[in-house]
Each structure stands twice: as structure tokens, then as C-alpha cells.
Amino acid sequence: MAEEEQESKDFFVCIQNPKNLRRNLLESSKSTLSILKQVYTVKQIREAKHEVMDSVINELRELKILVQKTDDLMPKHTREELKKLVPEIEIKKKSASKREKFSLKDKEELAQQLQAQPGSDMDKLTRALSDIEKKLQNL
Image (cartoon, rainbow, N blue to C red):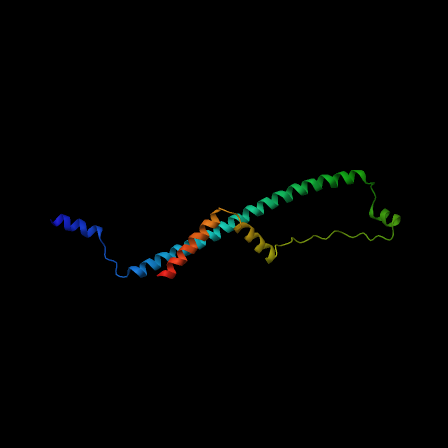
């Protein structure tokens, strides 16, 4: 008899404030899902960035080949000779161009495109977040 009472005490635990405990669990689930959503968004942005970088690298390779071909076809002249041949044209050194950064609008468009993918993990996370928020409101 004493063993049965001991076993029943091990299985049943009294929770003083079950609503408060449930609310805390749901809020922690909500914050975990929001973090997962942000991580997933960053992952998608990185993948998109790598795709763009790969295409830029390929285009630069093509440009390099084309520039080499034009250099081979163009006659060789020094700057002084060019000034004598065409005095109207100013020859300037090329300035180093700064990298163009994404504008806020571009970032928003990219985020919308990433969220528009049907059946993705982002949709699942968003739905789970909205379910948890509904449960929290019902409490």
C-alpha cells in the first residue's frame, strides 16, 4: 500500500497557477519561433546574396575577356600621343567606385519575395507564431 501511494505521488504534481505556467510556456515558444523566423530570413538573404555574387563573378569574367580582346584590337598609344591626336578629349584617371549598398526599399522587396514562397519553412513558422498568439489571447 505504501508503495502505491509513493508511485502515485511521483506521477502527480500539483501546479499552483496552471494558467500562468501555460502563458509563460506559450510566450517562450513565441519568442523561440520568432528567433527561428529571423534566422531563416537571414539564411535566405545569405543564399540570395551568394547567388547574386556568383552571377556578378561570372559577368566580371566575361567582361575581363572582352576587355582583353578590345585591348588586343586597339592600337597602342600613350597619353601624350592621345592628347596630340585628340586634344578635345580629357583623359582622367579612373576613380575607385564605392560599392553600392542595398537601399531600404531593396531590402523590403527582398524580404517580401522571400516570404511569398509558398509552403516554405517561413510560412510554417509564421503560422505557428500566429497560432501561439491566438492561444495567448484566449488565456
